[in-house]
Amino acid sequence: MTRILILGGTIEARTTAQVLVERPGVRVITSLAGRTDHPIRPAGELRIGGFGGADGLRDYLLAERIDRVLDATHPFAARISANARLACRAAGVPLVVLTRPRWAPEPSDRWLTAASPERAAALVADLPAGTVLLTIGRGSLDAFAPIDRHRFVIRSVDAPTGPLPARHEIVLARGPFTLADELELMRARGVDVLVTKNSGGPAAAAKLDAARTIGATVVVIDRPTPDPTDADPTDADPAGTDPTDADPAGMDPLAPDVPVAGVVTVTDPREAIDQLLDSATPTP
Ligand code: NAP
Image (cartoon, rainbow, N blue to C red; front, side, top):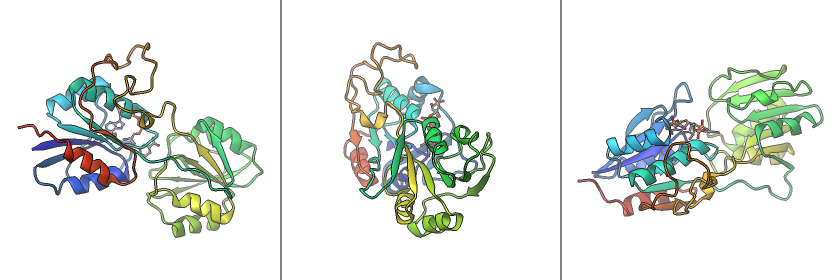
């Protein structure tokens, strides 16, 4: 039996779990952080909640005798990805990272890039008064709360709980969205500006196509720095941190390499599945 832990919270994680559970001799456990109120249940087993840092994840891997880990978390979920690298090294468990290529503007696009939600809010505050569609989840909305120049349309899976801009409408919806969905939303609300994270991949890209179609300005929040999906797990410094820094989880990121199945930089989860199964050494 090969025990695979999927660090999830994305459509790719669910797609991968669906395929893996149908393989004989494979046990699939998906882990979610518990951020959404009613998560879509993936195929296979499910656990919800943090592990307690990299140390906790290492202990979990050893206790559950996990044979390999798939990090299929969102590109902006930098902490769990860094923890996965540390924990897998410490536990001697191979790690496959399934990532998404960043989006890039097309020549006709009007993109403004920002290093953080705060910088994105500053850019938005300087734009001519209009309607701004925020598609950045509910965790980073505070930065936009003081802006009264614009009307905001806030799309989120669950209702936001923190401070919000004075003029706003909340649209509760869960993707993926088609181009027709996005065009309908943007045209019905008269959207002038789209704010998005650079999540990458095809599943959430329709909003960029829609913004292009209607000529909206797009404010794109860059991925966190360091972006753990840029690093090769065989690097001495997998999390992209200064190796002279104390490891926050109490582990040594420079510990001897463990077997690593590789970093898969594709949008097609099938390549990650091949990596997971081809290099599998099942626990007896
Ligand atoms: P994060 O900042 O990287 O992680 C913060 C902490 O949440 C981690 O240290 C870990 O707690 C826990 N955690 C995160 N993902 C987990 C998982 N899959 N299973 C168990 N614990 C997890 O993550 P985040 O940005 O808050 O995102 C949380 C989850 O939402 C991720 O799984 C991600 O795939 C999904 N998501 C995030 C975004 C986004 O924009 N950030 C968008 C869509 C989906 P412990 O240290 O206690 O283990």
